[in-house]
Image 1 (cartoon, rainbow, N blue to C red):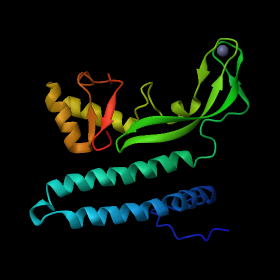
Image 2 (image 1 turned 135 degrees about the vertical axis):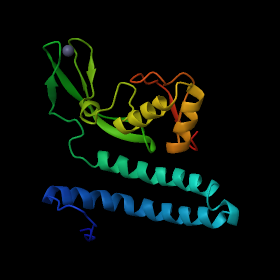
Image 3 (image 1 turned 60 degrees about the vertical axis):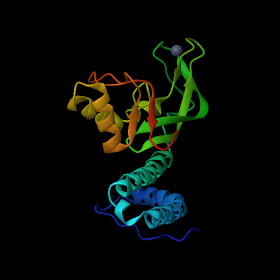
Image 4 (image 1 turned 45 degrees about the vertical axis):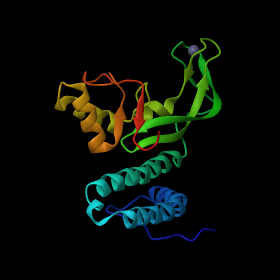
Length: 197
Ligand SMILES: [Zn+2]
């Protein structure tokens, strides 16, 4: 049995929430230890005049990777992940069959995440369903609500695309491709994360 570690919490958790917190903590503790050493090495490698400025942005990108790990585990440690039983209702009136778990890549404010979710298929109409996407409020392009908000805000700051993209990269590390944004509420299909491609 894994020894329970104290988890700092600002609000009291229900028993099942505390169990989830412990499960996430056990999953991330080894990864986080490696990340902390990488962060210490990054900062030790900076020249005096680069600790701030260059160092700040490089640190932010590394911390984004830590945030992405936490988000991934927080979602993937949930027990249901869109599972509603061996079959679900389909819009066509028939029912879909649970086909298994599918991995997908999602764009978040911390960069790309690899998420697992249930996958259903309807043999009558040929449509597939991934209910976890709706629960997580991912859009069709698999962009998280947080990333959508950041992209939209950056687009709102200026009507010039280049400036908006530069703002987004500087503030969040998210890089949107040419023609990807500006129109509020219209998001593009392709995003890249600085430092990951
Ligand atoms: Zn159907």
